[in-house]
View 1 (tube, rainbow, N blue to C red):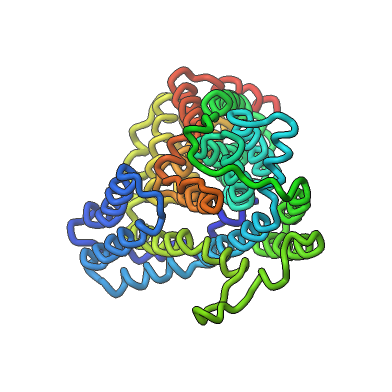
View 2: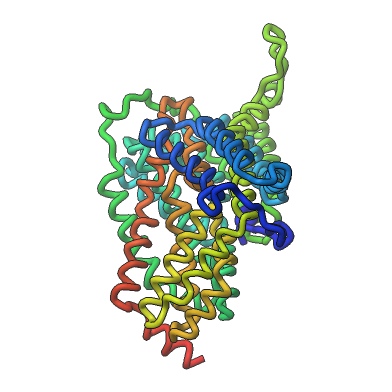
Length: 475
């Protein structure tokens, strides 16, 4: 189960609502300002997530001014920022940065390039392989964000010498992580979609394959075709392969974390085990020295080292996460999401209209809450009620919910998965690779685009609707 997608019941907003000047428009104005700012930065080509800090700060300020009770709004923001899930994400970003710093310093990227060159994998082939690797890891562990923070720092820097398009490569990494979040039986979105529709997880996953595989196949083909970048276009220096294959041993570090996740251990514990494994492996192989981990720069009177360097990598996305969760908490306190969903429920009569309503409700909920699992929980009960009355099978309802939340958060530049994937491209700077913006990363997530197309096709044509009904009646 994806620790980063867990939202405990005690973190939901209190029953007392916040009232805003301007009513609903006043309540959503801060979010609207944030989305406008994100769009502006994205279209301007600003790849650094730190640019979102100022926009979020201005949006929260606007919310404080519009709230009729500024103190209550401020309390809601602080409560949202201090939720255990937020601190978990921040700690995970920091630990992931340290793990990536250790693995890269140990020569893993150089050895990966040497290995890929030896077996003849490069260009679009390497991008497709990266998609498959991330799909396997995310399906096995159920964590999309965990897959990104483990895989991106390892795979992205290799683009420098393997003639792979850096933008396509990070898009493929995000797409592979999305695939597992969509189909894994231990993903939070799978568990939430199945449980809210009162059906079994195994049946939901089996019925979801017919939607996921076409989208996955499309992504795999597109990355293979479009993933290559001619050496003259990729204006970076080739990676020094002096490490030979020695750095492959550093793969033990992320592997240790993945094994711990497969054993259902806590994400923090899993990352710490990976860090310790990385330190031991690096020291034992001689690729990392003890002094490189932490030392004092006497000329500048500051501490430096791989540990601090890794921690600093997680700073940008950590501050973004804290501010975003504060902004969303203020919106949730207004009750806008529940009111909006409730007002739409009476517009459904036929199964197709009901499915369009479910699609619209979950789409609005995930955009307003910026959190996949929270969105499912927000509309799950009413989806169950509306879907049953329209004759839509439980598997089908669960699939509609899960497919929708595996699109927007992995496509739009103001969601944590795209921000995280973009922030991980900092790992390529040492190899001459560019930082990629969240806007570009999401746009090149071909799996989520394919899944969106499958979702619209399924609702428009009824594809899979009757089959789900027949299978459930056989149970």
